[in-house]
Image (cartoon, rainbow, N blue to C red; front, side, top):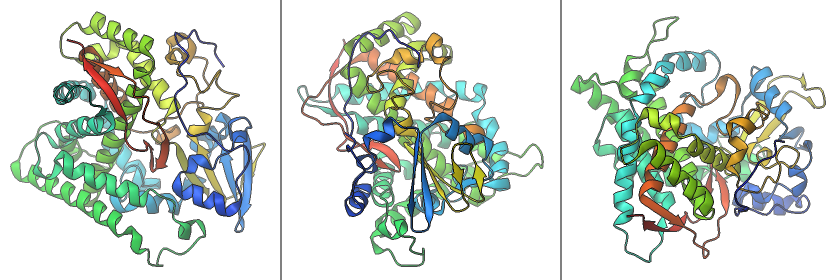
Length: 460
């Protein structure tokens, strides 16, 4: 646990864990309402516990050594659960996030060139342009009113996706249309289903999922139309869609099928839109309540960038901006929980896992665990300074997963978040909103209930 020299003592709001495990019925109700309300205080202090239920053990991991076992040492044993696939599968199909085995390996190899650093550097101008448009929208907000920065960040990151994946304006990817589909999908499909918790077969009708399935169909139809339009145009631009269309597996020469293209376009919309928007929304909340941090960001962006639009070398030089983003993702990791199921028995040393057992990898809990972080509830970007970050366990901080399946878009997300944050703080001052209670809730991703309304003022 590296000691840090913090400049403030802001303790951001979150869910207060129960003092002890909840009774079964109450626990199930809270699991559906918000899983964070179920995990007791002991989880943030002890390294492990397991619960036996309906014939199998549910392992709750939040220890770096256990994360390493699941995500690196035994990835062939710990596979994605049917529960997880059922939540995201209707929208994402068998894209990079959901595919397994050889199918995943092929897609990863084929897509990798699209995420090389030179390809990403070419996208920074799109990040900067989206952020500038966001500044203009916020400046137009009447004085004295709050701005829902969650909604604004969703708009900004969707604009980036449209520009970098689809090569510009697309009639099927208007902000309101896609944001509505994503919201409908997350709110319906993101809730734990009691039937699933009790192991009810998938063929049992679940009429309440209709809205989510319609949202998934709308997203996939938009992806189909975008791919068709690009092919018909003959355009060979080097945006992400162009790179995916041209991608070939370096080992076999095989390209993506139409279905794989659709799956991955929708995957990148979800992963590149929702998660970065959440990171930025929570970051703006944090710096609104930590003015010393916000002032340091402003000084850094002026020192590095002056008044020029943010470009790729500037992003690489905005070191403190990346520290702030990383600390935001520690406190509010967009992917707060990753579940796996064991396909065979495996001995982890201090824990024996049997075939069929579930492994719940609690990223949110590990990021706030008292044995891993000094004053874990405090907002302190100095944890990720170059000097302090080197002392962190490799599997102690996992906002993008870990191991061979670490998110392929991790560098994309960091560069996008830094470029947008720098543009915003240079032009706008973010101020706290004491009337709003911040409560994160797991709905596939970790989202703030009721959005993130903040007061915002122009700097000039």
